[in-house]
Structure formats: structure tokens, C-alpha cells
Length: 218
Length: 218
Image (cartoon, rainbow over all chains, first blue to last red; front, side, top):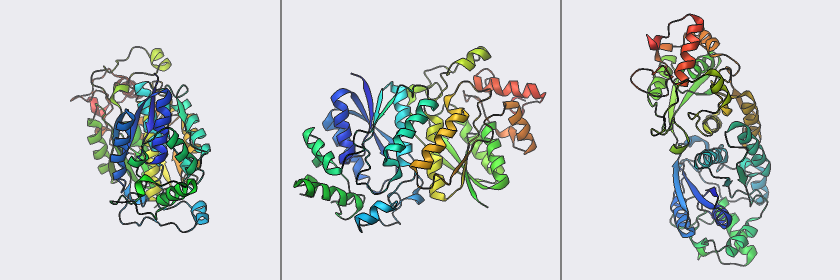
């Protein structure tokens, strides 16, 4: 089986990307320890990789703390105001250049391990204005690696969920038997999900749309 | 003074970029500890930043060891064969996606610190076929960050040496009083420069072209 690299955060989207990847590839999950306040997601990611029977590597990266409420405990994680507001602004939970850094490191691993594909579970449908979750960003990234790396022209960047709504992703996850009970989405990383941060909001709304019980909020 | 981020490896090129940057900006140097076998360059970089009176941050990144002779002690660092051969192949000292990763992290720091410019001392003139040292790579990178980050459209990526020959860079360095005696170029990282790796070869040739004594080979 051909090799793939999958970015795995521990949330529903990346777990679904991992389960999609393993249908056709032998995936290695990259789990990033980047100073996120919800470090808990790292443990979720490890458990999900284990359940999927996939190898994983935890990669540490020093991000600057000043730039994001996800990295800086002195900044507060915003609670959901209105959908309209979420869609028109880049929230304080945005981490500068995060997907660019994660994908670049994934490309480095892919080149080194001779993997043919990098999977990322990002999606832009109902996500709060992150510039690095949009389809055009991934198109531009493909051009950079095609020119600026040794094997980049042969390496594929798959973003299978990019145009999907969260509820559609959950449907796919259920079909693929993704262990949703092991996933973690809350930005706050407390003992239980807060239920009011952007990430909890979108997750809750999607489960409600489907009329399903979220196993993490049981 | 406006802020800038400068990628500083400890070699002549990045030290020259730092001295160019400090003419008009208040630079912070980013020094990468990425498992390079010539770790010695990190100490050189710190001393150069100190001499220039600039702040620095050492950023650790886990690179995969398998992909490069610069990271893997089991692979041998190539010695110079012929200029023609160097120009037509990507050598084993190529580190997959290195400049892409370093620049992406620099952009993250720049966004977080509200710096306006990122300086990188890369050049392609007489360099051994690294795909991520060419002008077009930087042009494509600018497009990615303009679209995929919050402030990327306002952030400038300066590659002031990209079309310069090594000997021209050394001339600029001398003019700017770059402490060349503190720089380190050798890929092997021994107690003295090996004199025969690609990096030593280009450095020696450039000093010879100028009829100058290299202070590091004295």
C-alpha cells in the first residue's frame, strides 16, 4: 500500500480524514504539539491513531504565544456571538500561519518517507473565517511545493472535506466508524467541553442538525 | 523603527541579511535548531545576533532525519565533485521543505509581533540546486501568505541576495562590517571547517575570487 501523511489534531475533521486515508493508503499521522491550550487534543489524537491502527509521530513546534488566544492563556477564548459575526471576522483563536506550517512540515515528512499524499481535514463551509482553511489556499500551496521541493510535483495534497459542512463530515465519520467518542474539539481543554467556544458551537449545531447525540457531551 | 524578522543560520548569507535589515528595521533573528549535524552554526548565529545588537529566538523544529545528509549522521556529506554536477542535481544535503518551513514559522512570528518584513538570505546564483532558494519559489510563497494568513498581504518577504554571487555577498558583508570571523558554513560541524563539502567549497572559491583571506580558515 502506498504511504500517506495525515495531519491529526484529535478533532472530528482530522479523524475523519485519517479514516478516509486508510481506505487506500498506509497513513502515518502527524500530531502537533504547538503549545495549544487544549493540549488534551494530543491525547485524543494518539488514541484515535491507535484505534485506526496507524503509526503516529508527535511533532513539537515553538509557535509565538503572542499571536493567538489558543496559545496564550492571558487571552480569553471567545464565546459564540452570532454566526454572522463569526463569518465576517478572523477570530482571536486564529493561529498565524498554522496550516501553512503544519502542511510544510507534513511535506517534509512525506518527501523523507516517500509518501505520495498528504491529507488535511480542513474545511471552510461553516468555519469561522480562518484564511488557511479555504480551497484557494490549498491550491496556492500546491504550486509552492511543486516548484520549491524535490518531489513536490508528484506529491498530492488531499483536502477531502474542504467543501463539506460539519454535519456532512459527521455523517461520513459515522459511515467510516470513526471513534467519535475519542475526539476532542473544545478550545478550552478543560475536563469537559465548555459548550460555548466557536469550536463547541459548530460541533453542537452539527449534531443537532443530524438529530444525533454527541458521544462527548453525553 | 519598524520591526523585521530575519532568518539567521550563522553563515555568511544570513548574517549579511541581518546587517542589511538593521539598517532600516529593528530586527529579531530567528535561529533554527532542527537537528542539523552542524549544530555549531547555532552558536555562531547567537554570537552574530549579539554582535549586531539584535534580539534572537531559538526555534526548535523536529525534522524527519531520514531525508537529508544534514540531519542523518549515517548518511555522508558529499564532497565537491564538479561544479557542473553540483548544478544539475539536488544534493543529499538538501533538507526537504526547509525554507518553506522556516519562512512559514517566520511569517507566524511576524504576524504575532506585528513585524512588517521577513528577511531571508537565500541565493540561487552558485548554489547547488536547492529548489527552495530560487526567486520563483519566493514569488509563489508570497502569494500563499497573501491569501492564507491574516496580515500576509501587508507582510513583505525580502530576499535581498537572491541574485547575488557568493563573492558579491562577501563584498556586501565587508562593507556592512559583518563579523565574518564569527560565521560558520561547514556542513560537517567539526572543530574546524572541512574545506571539502559543498558549503566550504563555495565559500573558499568566493574568497579566492576576491583575493581575500577567509578569517575562519586562517
